[in-house]
Length: 174
Image (cartoon, rainbow, N blue to C red; front, side, top):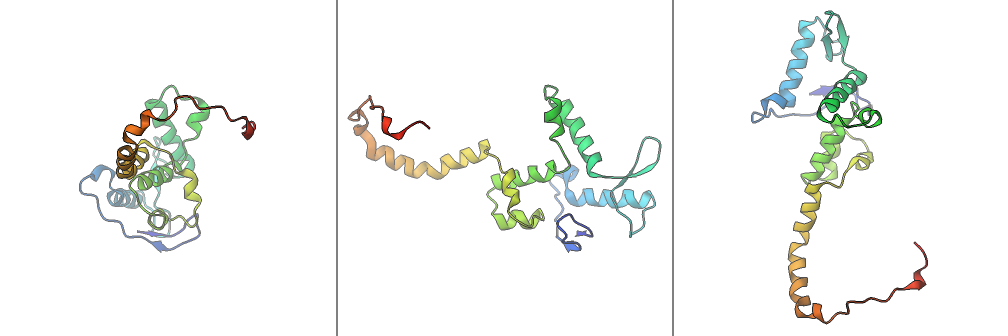
């Protein structure tokens, strides 16, 4: 896939995507192909943007960040009717990239991989990383061997330690 124009100014950048035969409904290759076919069906030339659709009146419109946000917000309202207006407004076209960053981080992908696949220039993607249950589970797993060793060493000594710890007033307020 070649990105003719990008926000990161890496215009003309090409990235190879493999088709996801296990999940054809959400496969990015198939989605790109459907977008391409729709653009051709609606009469777009190769020099025009492919992100187009026909509205309810049959008028061809460009797929903009605002339209994507509108669709995501409508999904959020249906899935989470208890969200406030401010919470709903946080769903933007950028939310899809944020979701992808979080999923790749949970999968243990390194920074170079994340930046390359999601076309991120700097480290600003790190602002979107979340403390998720998947990462918490990985944290526990990563420490499991050391925790087991500690428990063996600690063993019977746990009953020797004092139950009451004096308050240390020398640290000040924090």
